[in-house]
Length: 273
Image (cartoon, rainbow, N blue to C red; front, side, top):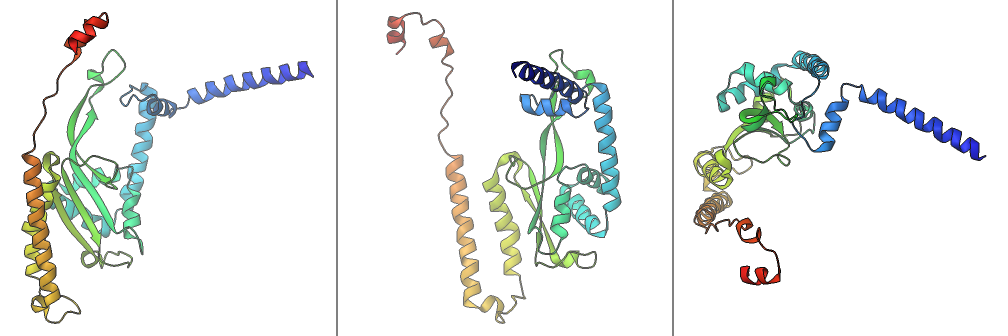
């Protein structure tokens, strides 16, 4: 029995070694290892980079073939709002790993919103700038990408699409069923961006609104007037909060290394204290 256990253990060890060798040879293994080691900018072997680039190209062309009038409407609005060409926007969308969110947005009872961030993102430079320690140099570059809005820090411009109903979004109704807006928070100043968006865009639009649905009196209705007053009041509170935050006291960061680097015994600690 003991010899059987040893033999089985040896077989398992051999198979594990063979499996490890096979997996290590996989082109995606380096990516997995990079993600688990905490190093975000690992230099991959040239064969792996070529394989990944080939797979990415195939995926992009498959997505490009899916582009229809609904996507083109989104692309057109984004290009106009952000200041990019439609070709640049299309390339960014089909290269995005969250591309499927667009399909979920179009679906009946689908996503209520579709968000895009356009802001500085660390990008790897070319191989020529690779460092000897195996990491690549990175520099911030403007990038347009799809987001859920909860995982990335918001430091630039947010372009958003909002559905007005649970209908399926088609090429014929996309312009009626989807609203588009821009929320500018350059340098991460979110409160200022929100204040500007509400005071300069939303409130003027609401006050010029003629059709209020079932409310026939429109702006003369007391509930509509109360609503607009509440929005005005909220913007005023938002402005006060922003100014209070901007006027806050900034405590200077103190480098304590110069005080503790030469501490040798308890009396030194007492003196430093």
